[in-house]
Length: 626
Image 1 (cartoon, rainbow, N blue to C red):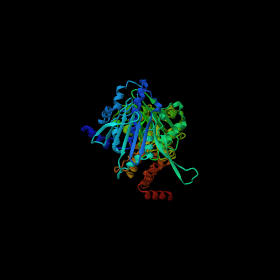
Image 2 (cartoon, one colour; image 1 turned 30 degrees about the horizontal axis):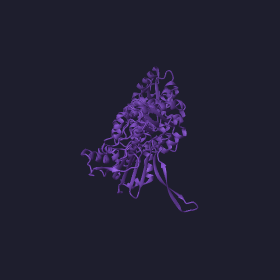
Image 3 (spheres, rainbow, N blue to C red; image 1 turned 90 degrees about the horizontal axis):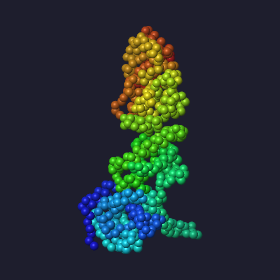
């Protein structure tokens, strides 16, 4: 029989598909198994609607076989099979899908579950094969036909013989090259691995004869081998089982096996959704961050399935960056099996699924915070920074989604509180939410700026991570309460009378402060303050950049350094204030030394470097010797 040519556009499609669409050669087996499952689905549907079709679901199976000597891999099924015309139509024209047509013709019927598109996916087998043979006998027919092709050159269809209905696909596996070891696809372990990875939840048994090696009875070193038929797939995915019948141990075992985590997860989120788009999801919130979580190497994403068939290992578009710690799977019948990453990014169904998942994750986290605070705090220790990044990222576009999930230690007892809890416990006269930044809770607790706020009985949020202040500044205010850094120059804790008295005192000593400022050029102002209780001096800032933000931004590998606009504030109730006034009148040279000492002292308190530590040490020694 003369070989038939593919149409010109089909040749181009095949070349494009093999070299561009499918960059992962392993998926060819997924495609062929999915097509076999489709064929069985069709016959099973007919058995439900046509009494003359007498076959039970338990009798259906997909069988795999390898022959290393002949370099063949065979995939067979006892599904509906194909007539000669169907072989021509389904395999002679690329992207002509018998399964897709069947689905479209019967989409109003709920029992149909077609997962493949018998067309483009089938041709992925040419990535690993020199030639493909498809023998098929349609159910109810006595005639069998064989479709044979070596690729873009064309194909032929000829009569054949088969003992029963169904389809047998035989791949002649390519010889190994320097880049690809095609012989791996002739190894039992490789086939098992691919079935487990991509087709583990096909609803029909995928069987293969597996070689087993045992010691001969009564021998210490002689072995004998025999073949056993094994079912390679689980068939019923955990996420499609009744939640009420799944134990905690089953959930945890699945998580451990699937995501290679030695610790049990903090939370399991198992959902079924129906509506504009239907899907099942099984999500896990880990109990700890992976070692590479806060690095560029970490890849987020959920495993994406279409009716139990894996179509993407990490579908990153299913998770926003701030929930990138979530692991799990999503399975939807409304997603095409043959879909690229680029198409997924524009897929409306995927966007609906992603939105639903995001809302579900947030709801579960809020429930954990209110019902299981200790567990939520453990989660926060691992992933809180990611939520704060989410608030700051994209110019605060997502801050309203995440602000309720934040926790901060406080000055009162160092325990974590949410912003809602903070506001709820605020004093009646308190108008702002106060926060302070530093390297550790203990170091923040010793800052001069926190003394007065604590004396007022106000709680302070303690921020120890570099992203904290960026996130809080992005939030701006919460429930009508402004978020205020205790180190900002406009901290408003004084009564009107105290403000007036301080204003008069600073006006009276403006010449003193001008003199001191001339000695330390990198401050905007020197002045007395009421914000300090026992400490003699501190630095405050004016403008958008605080001292902590200066340190964070200058630690980054950039050429242009930033500098906070600093104010040197002196405790007007401290004995040092009187001494400075005396020096200005009687000993201006000593005032210069005191100014340098006080400014460097303030910088040390803030964790800032001193420009000339040798001079500072000498000045201290001189003062101690007097």
